[in-house]
Length: 132
Figure: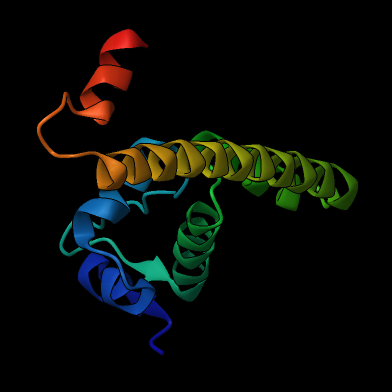
């Protein structure tokens, strides 16, 4: 990989589009290199690693604000705090999964009520939503 990349090459290497790079810069997650008098900004190979880190963290459910916190913790070599943040995220995901399971069970019950109905009565799904 080249030691210095254009924004297009950086985006390609990191698997994102150019606007994503610019957005991360506006959010303060990625430094914007200075622009030489005659030429284009150049990004280091480290910028590729940083963008990939951001995307992977997002895929794990971290918000961009939380990603910023992770980047700060990484710079401070604060593994204990990073672990705590990940553990909190894991708890949130478990709660969301439980909530989704309850929603799934409710919808399954409503669909079964529809399947058991004669077809000419009021719709149990509509009735349940109207009551709620």
